[in-house]
Length: 343
Length: 140
Ligand code: SF4
Ligand code: SF4
Ligand code: FES
Image 1 (cartoon, each protein chain N blue to C red):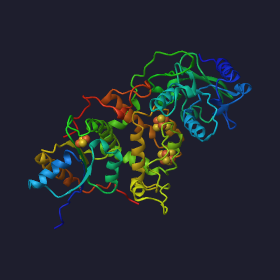
Image 2 (image 1 turned 30 degrees about the vertical axis):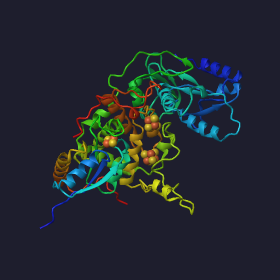
Image 3 (image 1 turned 90 degrees about the vertical axis):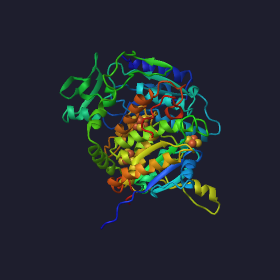
Image 4 (image 1 turned 60 degrees about the vertical axis):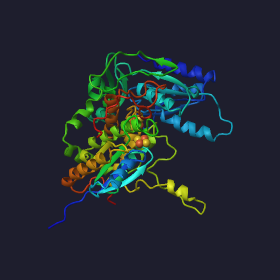
């Protein structure tokens, strides 16, 4: 079992010895049970740190912001940032390392194992409790959760409220860390791509109807892009507002600035956005599920990414986020890569 | 009688092989349907998935991507990167339910003028019964 006191103790030591600038973790929010990200700078504040099955967020995204902030500082604090990661989050760190977006010495990774469960799906939880207010939720001894409501404690098996991505997770523990809390369980999902089965069994027309309906809803708020740790490009092909033409804009610059996609949230343009988003995340998305969680219109974005994760695995034997030293999915090839689709 | 539907094909051809192959077809006066808008790129490895999407977005009924045979790429391995990347594009297009017959990839060498004409002929006859592509076409 992961011991919260041990986590706090570790964090406190790091801050006391001034080994890290600050620590990014989870704390209780002011609005109900959901945690919020915590930026702990002082040793005494480690008391705010929490760890429970609602620590859903992938905090790795803050490394992107940290890097941008640091780049603007004149005399930046060169100490690493402490970061609390789950298994999936640690694979995001690995991808950022693999792409040399961050340096290993700039982060101190506090890994927490999800052991036999993972995080809870908020929506499933609300449904399961039929509106009853949750006071507390903890990891159970074996593989469930202990949920406390005003009517007392109930044990809920993980199959009922565990997030779908956790059910399909292939490593429930951090794969890169400086300190690890909890055990590394040896458990493999029966089928890591189970959620895709239903979609793949539909006919082509049905799939089209499905995606047409889903992507038509998108209002292009770009929350999915803002939350993704891999969406760190300084400029994104879907933005055209930065196409400012002045008297000094050269012909070359204009030629480079093609307006690939219109801003209007209409189906055709949404398709381009989501297609490019998915493709650019191929071999990079570690299935933290953040994009889908933040989408105000509940578009099942995870499927698009998961599909490419599956193809990466099946066509090219590529696992995402395990080895920062190997080339990324599309910056390498094998002689025997399939080409039966090529004439 | 209504006129027969003529599909518009956007073909991304690498300069060193496929584009030269299409030139050979031209100078040898081989006949093939005039439905193609060829776009010469330096290498099949330089074709971004966005080019393909954008072509459909701007109304292409079919898109062809063509490069040198493996081993013949002018930049040694550009086409092998392309092979991987385009396989993902193809899978994703099919996953969202887009008609897979509208997309084609091929290897055409500078000497394969007749292979090129055959590919275009077949592609056109494959696209005709499908009618105009409206799914991804810009609709503002
Ligand atoms: S978060 Fe949802 S609505 Fe916003 S851009 Fe992404 S898919 Fe569209
Ligand atoms: S695409 Fe979504 S699930 Fe994948 S890494 Fe980005 S936010 Fe996480
Ligand atoms: S130059 Fe033809 S594929 Fe690279």
